[in-house]
Amino acid sequence: MNGKLYLCPTPIGNLNDITYRTLETLKSVDLIAAEDTRVSAKLLNHFDIKVPTTSYYEHNKREKGNYLIEKLLSGTNIAVITDAGMPGISDPGEDLVKLCIQNGIEIEALPGPCAFATALVASGMPTGRFAFEGFLTVNKKNRLEHLQSVRNDTRTLIFYEAPHKLLSTLRDMLEVFGNRKIVLARELTKKFEEYNRTTLQDAVTYYEETSPKGEFVLIIEGADAKKLEEEYLNSLPSAETLLKKYSAEGMRAKELTRRVADELKQPRREIYDLYLNIKDTL
Image (cartoon, rainbow, N blue to C red; front, side):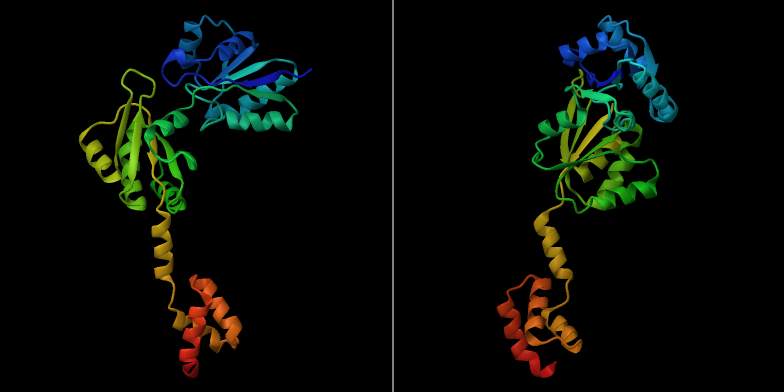
């Protein structure tokens, strides 16, 4: 009989945030796969959990993933934990879940702490629709490409960032997004928890003078839908230009006015009246 994989979220700072269910699961499994066994040892020792641990992280996930699947197929129950938060979020636990599904192994995800959700609900930004983008690459070209790909997303955008990369990331965000509102959340649930509600320009200025400390969650307002619509309409050719273009292609009046009206998102009657006024010049 196969074992079961348990996804166990761990506190993102305050150890008291761990759930009873997570503690019971960690004590009952046969093996704990941890992102960093040295970091996890502090948590496990604090709660007197004596279960054996093994490392499972980004750079050994292929080799160790196969090892863990073999253990699960042999009947071993395994809990996966990260250094902090929910396994599978910006974490190789995602790959292990896929392997388990491929091998018919049961998975149980336990609810618990998650840094981006904690930061989002306290940020003051819209929470109805958001996009979690995780960590940006250290490669500037790829980082800019990533930011460009979400530049016109109207949802609230969420990123994780390390302190040594923060200023470069903020500068790139300012270049791509413009001076949007941003909330920088750091040291969540810890003694020096902080929410800096500001703008990208002011954030760049602040961290040029103040050395960033701690891991950051960046909550950024989405693109302005009305402004995007205006920019789109302003980029379109005039109705007269389109009427001349499609008339030259042989379109008849009805089809011609319908197409131009749809493209410019204008009333067909207005486009038809314009057509009547200029048809002798077409």
